[in-house]
Length: 85
Image (cartoon, rainbow, N blue to C red):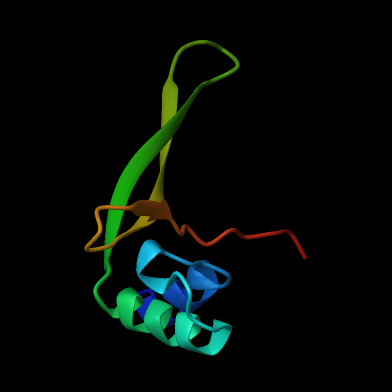
């Protein structure tokens, strides 16, 4: 459903963790890419509910949020954002 490599590439741009201190930018990028391979994607389904105009029913719609959790215990939301065309 989701391409974890593409998501990690998008989120990891410009990131420098403590392991990257003192390295040049190319080495930092390589380290970030290696670190991204140790990340797992997690999905969470939430529901947005609305009361109908006649106040007789509640209509709930699910939406999925995606998070990337890495070995260093950081968790970042990477839910794709859809913009109207």
